[in-house]
Amino acid sequence: MVALSELESIALTLNHTSIAPFLTYLTNTASSDKSPVRRQCIRILGFLSTTHDDALSPHVFKMISV
Image 1 (cartoon, one colour):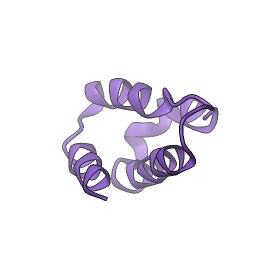
Image 2: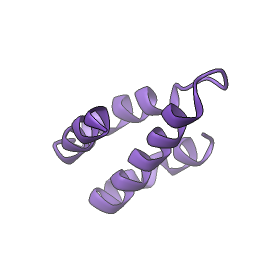
Image 3: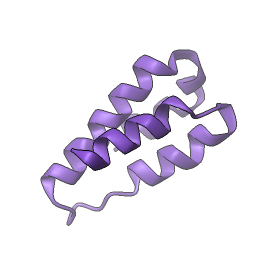
Image 4: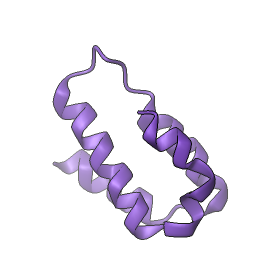
C-alpha cells in the first residue's frame, strides 16, 4: 500500500508533459507480473482519470489497451 500512496502522490503532481511517461510506466506491466501489481496499475489509471480528466483525452487509447 505504500507504493500505491506514492504513485497517487506522484499522479497528483503530473502536468501535461509528464502524463505520457507516467502512463508508459504504468502500462508496461507484462502478463507475467503478479495480479496485485497489475490490479494496482489499473487502480492508478482510475485515479488519474478522476484527477486529470481532460488532460488524459489524448492518452485514452493507451489506457484502455492495458
